[in-house]
Length: 85
Image (cartoon, rainbow, N blue to C red; front, side):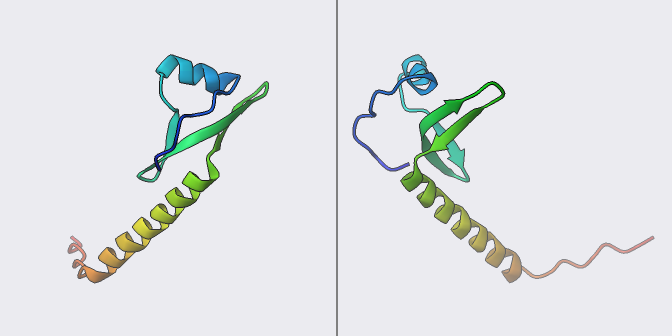
């Protein structure tokens, strides 16, 4: 998560979460924390709207992590399959 100035005071559920926890509410995308910018609530569910700039960075990190993991798998020699009995 990138450092930001003071969080703007909002209203509704997000403001309640900020009051309860005393700090910004975030979600994890891959290994990156992304701040929730808004929460929309209706009868059946709540939608967490993520900060778009932070989400962009998180997705880039996730793609790079996936590419790195794929390269490591390809670089490792294939293991012999276990013998059938």
